[in-house]
Image (cartoon, helix red, strand yellow):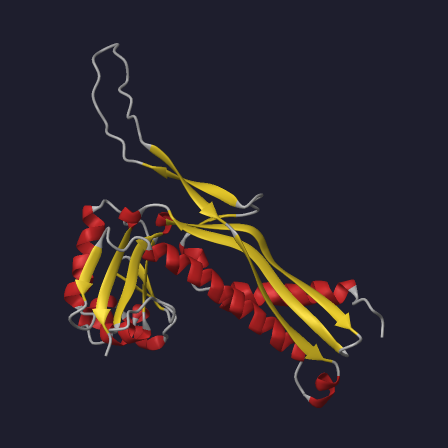
Length: 275
């Protein structure tokens, strides 16, 4: 067999990995600010403060808001997800082993993307926290977090997101205002699907990767899209190489990305006990 792999095959494989990553790999990358095609090991996200309007005298100068500007540094890191596909194994299976590896690689990189975003969200803990660690997530904790977002002037513009654990999602199903059509209408019932739902002007999603302490205290996050930055130096690319000495293909998927907390005021951490 040739020592090289046909270019069109590699391009097709890479397209499959990219599609899998887009569709199923990461839940959170579309919920935060994104910068693409970053050159270098770091980039910067702008954090802009609030302005104040004022009056002016006739023919006088327009007052200057003097908005605070701050640059938040975001470091990128390289990640890899590779595996072997034995040539003869493909003859013994009725499925495309390379496609299986493509999905596995895309999901692995997607989980890494979410992990970086969650780590950035977790940096906000201490700024705005709802401490419900004595019991399960309930309506009172949610309303307390809702108040904190409003007090911090976090925009209610359809770009708020909340991620909770699967246990916390189950707890929310016991809240009538979250789970009953009398309050939210038939279209937003969580029983129709567990991927996401709208509630309180926010898209809520269950996620399996949220931080938890040894004592079982889980932290969920309610945040605005602009509060976290996601930098992409290189999107997912794939390399497929034939190794004659192993009679196998080595398939490597890789990416260069980073995430950072831009504005802690735009994030509320909600803690609850999972038993």
